[in-house]
Length: 270
Image 1 (tube, rainbow, N blue to C red):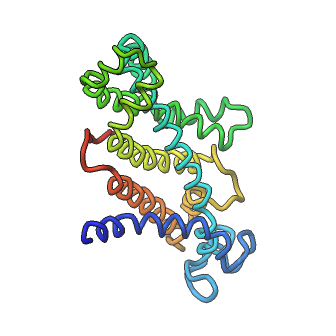
Image 2 (image 1 turned 60 degrees about the vertical axis):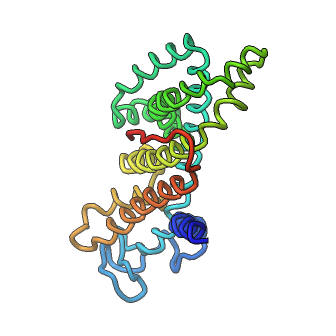
């Protein structure tokens, strides 16, 4: 019972934060684009977190600004984790394929994150969200695939996998039914880390204005737009920054809590 309560307590922060971000656009006390106070107005009255650079309510834009970031980060984390899990397992089962995947990953790992964001988003037709997702996959898969391949190698060399191979099972069957089920803890830990990395990458893209564009309500955009007035109303920067940090930490804790207690586990550098 105590372990179940502990699990719920570790899942609760992420669940509450995601629920608040999903429902946030319906809870805003003011219209997102209507000024309610002076530019960079201090907290008070109808604006408990003050106003942004145009006098818009910071609380309303904070409530509405997290849903898209969370949706994109979840999609990216699922995509990167899925691709990496399959490629890593295939590389462990087929060493020649594994060497090719590792060499390609070595090259892509050398690409600095900010340079990769600018190169891909600025050369992508119309840029925007799909460009950010493309950047996240290109930058995230190389790290993750090497991580999964390292964890899958002992499983691929185990007796039951060799028996299944000798029995004529196809590569797809070996990956989906023999290797990956034994890497659940690794894959869940990887998903949590990839979600955190995706949050930071999407936020960085927003800060560089190569993702969501003004006047969209977005946590990263709020930080960029209100930096100039941080001394007048710090909540325009602090509130979205705290929200991004809490989101990353809480989801990572939830993924760790859901991971099975047996099986290979490791920590992947972001």
